[in-house]
Length: 61
Image (cartoon, rainbow, N blue to C red):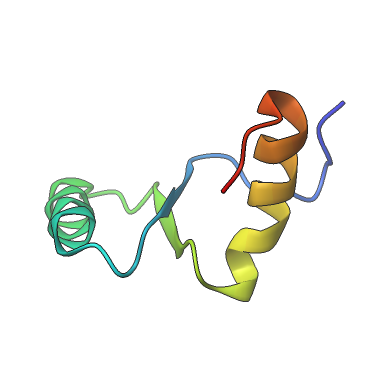
């Protein structure tokens, strides 16, 4: 069961990776309605999403 506090349309990305960062910038510019949110993998905001992902797939770094 997924926690109810997690927001839909969230992308967790590697904030250290320049390619990831460029991809995020591209999507932000393309997302005219601002429907997608981005959380850097290294941030506190991403932790709940990583816990869910890790529990679903049992393979987190």
